[in-house]
Figure 1 (cartoon, rainbow, N blue to C red):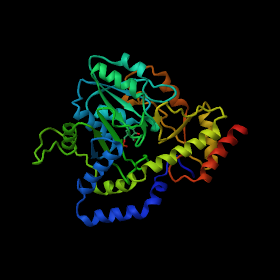
Figure 2 (cartoon, rainbow, N blue to C red):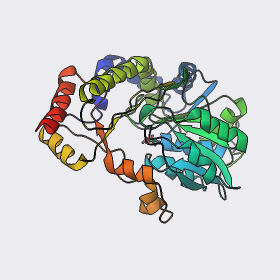
Figure 3 (tube, protein in one colour):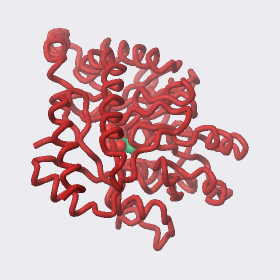
Figure 4 (cartoon, rainbow, N blue to C red):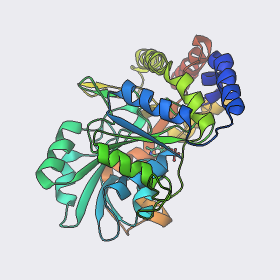
Length: 363
Ligand SMILES: Cc1ncc(COP(=O)(O)O)c(C=O)c1O
């Protein structure tokens, strides 16, 4: 079976280095918030061109910590897309704030900046820009709206490690950038992990406190925090993988181009690269009106195509706010299809996917 993502294939080429890194941590006797974490934080910040990086337990926690550190909570509203992974919205609710859903742009699957203004109220405090599938949201417009309205801008970079907007790495343009190191992500750990980046030293210090019970240097809680720490093993693994992130992202871009070249004449809505964006293809997503039949056909060829995401978050029981109209989001949810793409995918496997897609249309 060829799957949409394959974290094992992303591990195998670095197996020896990862095993060595793990052994070093096991022998060190330091397992939580030690030297591996602080070194990874420095290296990750340097890679992104950010001033500060703070490791934490997951991408979801990163978003919760970001909201808390910006004093956003009860009574506050946060603009979010509904066409996203659940955690973008779950984090807002966990922080005690209210998500306000805004529709997406049809071509790029990211927040429609033209609809953000109309969704703002006196209670709006922040926008979460999700760089979905590995491509930048409409950053110029969102930064402008945030500045004019005095809103905070949080970047959800869970799917966009290494992606760029006008030559600058995503995560470094808003107040805080939030990353996930879930194993399938572009920079994946061997378990859960996350990080936040920012340019403000006191904000970074507050994030460090909040991730550990609100503790100061004397281990006295100055404010209520949570427990969300990146562990030494994950940090050591991430340090190895960070060296290969640019090459991995380049490989993703080559695989994406192969798909786009081979499939562009079929009746599919292909991924569109935004002018000025460097897309890192966390997911290669097409749109088709024949999704169910296509998935079944691919399954017959031992290919697993995914759906990101079949149910928009505003239509899920836990996060619904009644019957909201988000037509572009609903349309995407009904037609998006993710084709297998991951670093380590060999040409033969990609050829199989392309042939199977061709066979579907040529039947
Ligand atoms: C867009 C987006 N935001 C947030 C998250 C949350 O990350 P994590 O699974 O590490 O909590 C994910 C990953 O699932 C994601 O894809």
